[in-house]
Length: 633
Ligand code: COA
Ligand code: AMP
Image (cartoon, rainbow, N blue to C red; front, side, top):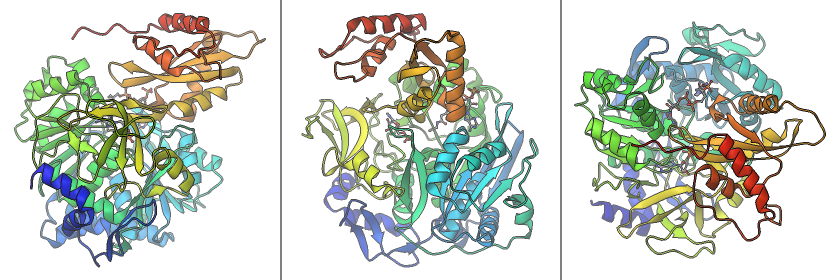
């Protein structure tokens, strides 16, 4: 089948196309209906009965691959390397599922997982899937406030965490963050299962906390619990335009089908291949391509606890590829920009053999042509950009390397994948012709694995994604499609920014900055950054009448954002201004602030209230050293 045939069939006969793809998944009971589109939740494989963990582990053992390595843990920060075969991984997962069951966790219960990149994070996710419990993984770089808001929303019966994470050489004490989060949350989990690491021993609350290791020693493994295809597998919170994160719901059946289709057709990864996704289980890329996709396809997945650089040098990716004979590498462009910054001539790479590597995939943020070409040049491998989001769970646009590899156009994630009926719409919802920029929207229904809704918030689901253009899902990204059908993603329509591949909300940062007692009002924008893609920049107007040390105030604001969101916010640049530029109706002209900071031509709206305010902000931005002079490449 060619790409064009697959794409057309997926749009013309979606039920036929996805029913065929679903044959690769193990079902206890096949579905009654492939797609139920009777309401906006678009349920796939209705009535089908399966178990995601069975598909990820037991099925391979059943098929004779039990002694193949399923997971490699490589941790330069703790100097540890460990391998688990499918049998060994299943044994641990089944036992941990047994612990959860003993603590009263049943199908449909939520379990929050707050873990660094250690095998136990993957084991915890799969143990939940085995029981039909809904996991919600919270990225380790988030602080107590963020963790609390997720606990409050998901209402987990149980939380799984660890004593600490390790950031290069810093020990991040996770358990005290968890304790603080539970204190802040109105919902209290009954049990916390804690993996104690030797680097830091957490203190335990005897009435709530349970030691994972000793429980696992005495636990008995449990079998997978059959669930409906439409039962949720997980909730993954992601940034929206406001302070409260949105819980994206992903179902079991559609997800498994899309994972398998994408592994075969996009990533071209076969059973036995070694798949290395350098991301984090806290992000959707980690869910799909560290855990579920590779394991469902019988690959060996790598759990890497380290950075692309500084753990200990910029050769980590190359060393891992050589050492484990990696076939597919997947990371964010920012990781390669970090490597390039430290090793522009790729001297470190020369020590390693990349022969096993077939393809490098990048996602999570826009991949600039320059970075893409550099990776291609130094590795001599195809570099494939793919565009997606937490909500979709897999690539909206990609180059299907297992189906029909196409010519790469740097700057484009190639073409829409089957089931994603991508259109570019103008502000009135009218479809735009090739080459014209507009809102990137997906004609409904969305293919399997895409969000079934927002956890306990249908209103937010409709308002955020479906109401703007009836019949379409709003991705929130802008872009265009060229005459040859190649997609170009240009940026966001809302206050979401992408910092080192991490999705963050400027709206949330504004809410936090406004909490500072000296702040009258503020604006946070994203500005271009050569390493992280984007960085947040804050503009603060102070309340009048109080004597202040301006540096002290900025310092306090920076610490406040770090305390509330976490270090991952990378909020370090802020300035005090007399006023914020606004339209006559009071709308803050964030776009103009960004144009100044990025050195772009200014598009001042005729409705601006006072151009002097914008001039004043320009001086403040210049004083911060922006726009930054672009480095000569
Ligand atoms: N737990 C605790 N803290 C974390 C964390 C985690 N899991 N992940 C990041 N942080 C902290 C960092 O230590 C850093 O703290 P600091 O301000 O004290 O230095 C801060 O959050 C910002 O992190 P980050 O933006 O990742 O910057 P960095 O300088 O540590 O690393 C890169 C920069 C480019 C090397 C790194 O972002 C990277 O490897 N990115 C790969 C992309 C990726 O994984 N994207 C996910 C989606 S695909
Ligand atoms: P997240 O939900 O964290 O995966 O972030 C999704 C957002 O990241 C998308 O809506 C885009 O704005 C951006 N993004 C992800 N991948 C790409 C890509 N390949 N090209 C451009 N933007 C991307």
